[in-house]
Image 1 (cartoon, rainbow, N blue to C red):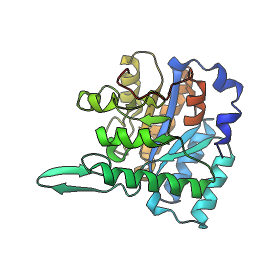
Image 2: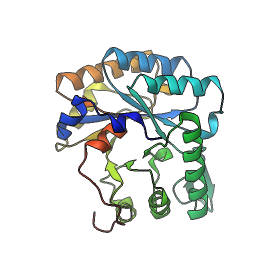
Image 3: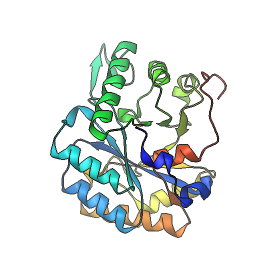
Length: 258
């Protein structure tokens, strides 16, 4: 089953100016709590669609969290995406290793397959977007993403020179969406600083990264102001599947031609 918004796009998604498109990328969902409820309440009050990255090991089948996730997607303003299986990192021989950076082809393949299967079970449909924990990324990540028949959007820093060679390995059918992180650090949005960052960027779609589980009351106010600023400057928010469906047809060829 394909996510319903990919099949029945609304008029806004079809007509959207992609130079003014934002996807809200909310990281680190492991279950329901007051922080996520507050985040969604503020987003919905502003008429904003959000995408939520799931650390899939944390969610059990036939649980209240699964029911909650399906209920959110039924509102057509939330889409869940793959944020890895366990989000773990460790040190090997003095090197920092992440779930999807430096962990090896076999590890990454197993974790991507496992997390995709878990989300399909939880939601009842394939998930088309992926964002790696800590935004770590290497050539093995590209190879295992290419092996997936359904992944078509990757949240990543598209201007990072250190991952440029790995990005070129991605199949052309996988769209890349650049990330703008929280201006004051993880879980610390700053509306004034984000406005400056967006003003300096060239026109084009972008994802704004947030970590709602870490929001305190002042950070939630900053997030609310960010949404008001986006609306004032004519930005449209999309879900990942809507964004992918709005793009020109993409080939399934291996990259190297990005």
